[in-house]
Image (cartoon, rainbow, N blue to C red; front, side, top):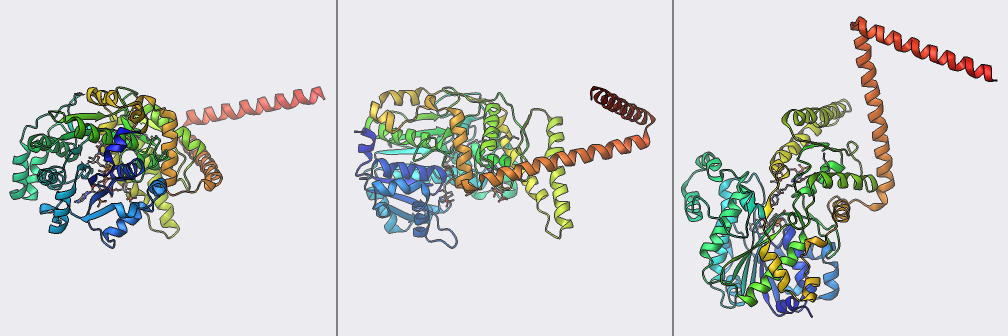
Amino acid sequence: MSMIAAFYGGKSILITGATGFLGKVLMEKLFRTSPDLKVIYILVRPKEGQTLQQRVIQILDSKLFEKVKEVCPNVHEKIRPISADLNQNDFAISKEDLQELLSHTNIVFHCAATVRFDDHLRHAVQLNVTATQQLLLMASQMPKLEAFIHISTAFSNCNLKHIDEVVYPCPVEPKKIIDSMEWLDDAIIDEITPKLIGDRPNTYTYTKALGEVVVQQEGGNLNIAIVRPSIMGATWQEPFPGWVDNLNGPSGLIIAAGKGFLRSIRATPMAVADLIPADTVVNLTLAVGWYTAVHRPKSTLVYHCTSGNLNPCNWGKMGLQVLATFEKIPFERAFRRPNADFTTNNITTHYWNAVSHRAPAIIYDFYLRLTGRKPRMTKLMNRLLRTLSMLEYFINRSWEWSTYNTEMLMSELSPEDQRVFNFDIRQLNWLEYIENYVLGVKKYLLKEDMAGIPEAKQHLKRLRNIHYLFNTALFLIAWRLLIARSQVARNVWFFIVSFCYKFLSYFRASSTLKV
Ligand SMILES: CCCCCCCCCCCCCCCCCCCCCCCC(=O)SCCNC(=O)CCNC(=O)[C@H](O)C(C)(C)COP(=O)(O)OP(=O)(O)OC[C@H]1O[C@@H](n2cnc3c(N)ncnc32)[C@H](O)[C@@H]1OP(=O)(O)O
Ligand SMILES: NC(=O)C1=CN([C@@H]2O[C@H](COP(=O)(O)OP(=O)(O)OC[C@H]3O[C@@H](n4cnc5c(N)ncnc54)[C@H](OP(=O)(O)O)[C@@H]3O)[C@@H](O)[C@H]2O)C=CC1
C-alpha cells in the first residue's frame, strides 16, 4: 500500500491554479491514487460566459480525467469550486466559503500564478507575491492545516549559475515592493521595473523570487515547503504519455516548428534543455506534501524538480528529435516543411529571420492579397519572433541546480511509493519522451486526427516540390540577369553549354558505335 496515497485519503485539500496545466494534472493524480479523499476545494475565478460549475465540468470531461472516472465515479461531488479572484482583496471569497475553507482544509497546494514573461510588474506582484502573502494569512487561520506547498520555479534565481535548494534574499524586501505598488502609478512602475528586476530577464522570474521570500518570511509556524520545477512539459507516463494543454514552454514552439512557421532559432545547441514532465512535478509535489505534513521539517525545505543534473538533454538533441518525429507524425496543413537552423550569433539570426521567417510571410501575404484575402502571415510571424525573443534567454544558457532535498525525499519513500509517485528523472528516455510530446501536441493541443497523417505527408511532399521549383526559378532568374549584365558570366555560360553539348555528342556517338 502506498503511504502517500493513504495519507491523502479522507483529507480536505485546497488547490489554487487548479484550472491551469499543473493544477489539472495534480487533481487528476490525487483523485486517481486517493479516491477516498474527502474534498478538493479549488479557487476558480469566474470567466466570461462560463459558470464555475461549467469550468469544472469542462475539466472533468477532458481526456485527462478518463481514468479518474473509473476509479472515482463520484469525482464531481468531490470537487468544490470556490469563486475567488487572486487579484482581489481577500480574493473576493464569500464569507460562507471562507469559513468552510478555514475550518476544513488540511493541505494547501498553491499553484496559481501569472506565468507570462511580459506581465506588467504591478500585476505580476499582485498575483505572484501579494496573493501568496494573503493565502499564507488564510492558511495561518486553518486549525487543521498540516502542510502548505508553494509552487515556485527553478528559474526564480536564474540570475545565478549555480542554484541551491535555499531561498535567496532579494535586494528590496517584498513588503516594500507590495506597498509601493499601491501608490506608484503605472508610468513610474514602468520606469523602475528594469532596475528592480536587475539581471533577471522578466517580471515573472523576479516576482516568483519575491514570492519565495514572502513564503519564508511570513510562513510563521506553518509546515511549508517550496517546489521549484524547471520547464514543465507534457506528461511522461501518467495518466498517459504526452498530455499537454497549453502553449507555454516548448509546446508553442513545437507547433510553430511543425507547422513550418519557425525554421530557425537563436539557441545554443549544447545548452541544457532543462525540461521536466508535468506528472514528475506532480509526483514530487504530492510526496513533498506528505513528507512536510508527516515529518514536519524544522525549516522551510526547497525541492528542485529539474532534469539537468541527473539526466541532461541539450537543445540540439531535442530539436533533432522533434524534427525526426515530424517526419513520422507530421502536422496537418503546414505552411512550409519543418526544418531547423540553430544559430548563435546576431548576424546569422538576423539573416535567417529575414530569409526563413519574414520573406516567406511577405510573399504569402502578397499571394493572399492577390487572391482577395486578408493578409495575416506577417502579423503572425512578428508575434512569433516576439515570443522567440522572450524565450531566448532560457535556451542559450545552462544552469546547475542542486537536488539534495529531492534526492533525500526519494530515499525516504517506500519502494511502493517510489513506483506510484515516481519522480526519478533518471529513468526518463528523452527520445521516447520527445516523440510522445510531439504526438501529444498534435492530438491534444492541435486536436488533429491520426487518420490525417497520410494526407499531411502528401502535403509536405507538395511543399517540397514547390520549394524546389521556387528555388530553381529563382536561380534561373538570377542567372539570366547576371548573363545580361556580365561578360564573365556570359563566358562561363558559353563554356558550360558547349561542354555539355560536346559531352552529349560524344555519348551519342559512342552508344551508336556499340550498336
Ligand atoms: C528551428 C528550430 C525548430 C526545431 C524544432 C523545435 C523545437 C522545439 C524544441 C526546441 C525549442 C526550444 C523551446 C524552448 C522554450 C523554453 C523556454 C521556457 C522557459 C521557461 C522558463 C521558466 C519556466 C516557468 O517557470 S513558467 C512557464 C513558462 N511561461 C511561459 O512559457 C509563458 C511564455 N509566454 C508568454 O509570456 C506570452 O505568451 C508571450 C509574451 C510569449 C506572448 O504574449 P502575447 O501577448 O503576444 O499573446 P499571447 O496571447 O500570450 O500569445 C500570442 C500568440 O503566441 C502564441 N504563443 C503563446 N505562447 C507561445 C509559446 N511559448 N510559443 C509559441 N507560441 C506561443 C499564442 O498561441 C498566440 O497565438 P495566436 O495565433 O496569436 O493566438
Ligand atoms: N509551466 C511551466 O513551465 C512552469 C510553471 N511553474 C509554476 O507552476 C505553477 C503552475 O503553472 P501552470 O500550471 O503552468 O500555469 P497556468 O498558466 O497553466 O495556470 C495558472 C493558474 O493560475 C490561475 N490564476 C491566474 N490568475 C488568477 C487569478 N487572478 N485568480 C485565480 N486564479 C488565477 C489560472 O486560472 P485561470 O484558468 O482562470 O486562468 C490557472 O488556473 C505556477 O506557479 C508556475 O509559476 C514552474 C515552473 C515551470
